[in-house]
Image 1 (spheres, rainbow, N blue to C red):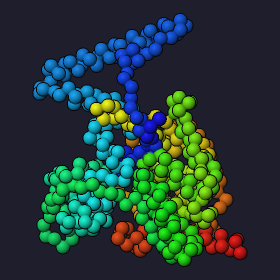
Image 2: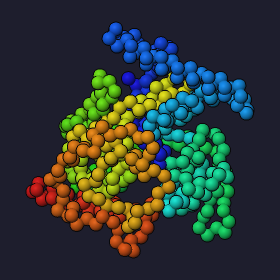
Image 3: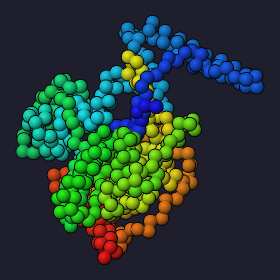
Image 4: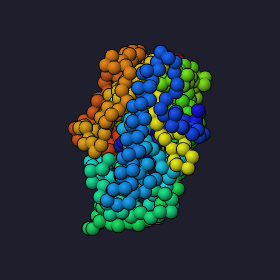
Length: 469
């Protein structure tokens, strides 16, 4: 059918398309198609009434369009007016359906491959400020002298104060070869710095990995773009080598991972499962509903697995976390995920961009809908002692006109966990008094959630090795 994607919009713009079904093209739609097909005599009256109402509404649209073209205070470009109308129609459906201009569609296709027009920095929101937390060498920001720890206060002279992280990132990204300037506050500098640079194609480092204490591997997956599955496999191979051929456990970090391609979510989940369903989708038409199962090989060979999630883990991340939780293949640590349980399909429109439209809901192997609910961790651990101030929507349920959850207020119960390690009840749900604030440059010392995930992984690995003996 095309290119499906499961994308979270809102706080984290880096989110892509989990299941995007890039449809090869859209056939011409006729006026009679809009009005509706002919039906039998029994339904003729009702259908005639529906057709008449649609005809009236289409006439209303034409009248408004004509009035805008004729009497608006400034001349209106027909293309802009129509695209705005299409955009309004889609955004009024749910938070994730939208109209993509030709330029936005090109950006989406590029981003799904793990690349985009940008500056080569990673930013995070720290107490309402946009802070540089990592920098790619030989990229525009590095050449311009941007440093880790810099606070970005404005883009092209426009303040970022009060903006969600997502919106701030949008302002910094853009077409390659376009110019952008950042206003920066730097520790030790007496005045704000103004740094100009030119955007370039940035290839995202989707997978990062390192070996932690006691031969426990750590893999950070930033997005579910095309390199995700291959990157996970390469990371497991490299970590196994670093551990002398014997890993004891693995931590998969999906925090703030906003989603991406559905096929990559399925592939990544399948990397850790020998068998069983991974996810199913239910569309408006039964024939469009689908199910996907594991390929049949756990690349960890059953080693203990801990998955880190938080409110920024959305769509594709929730599919992976939900599948591993339902099959009791992994223990989830962190806070409740975002709750985006819908799939978007991208319908290219010849010469006019594309429709990115919600076409299905997805369900975990146990039949749970995550829509507007999210995935609850098995062990709750907050990153900070006090919840941080939010400058945007924290979860799907906080958005306007969201897609309803078909399970209502009585969802299926989550499978009872019988495999939690002995120390699960001893894991604190928040940092102690005086714990240092999170510093991305010093994760081992300041990342409280990672510290607790490591404690869980160690306990799981000890139990596994003891039982193996």
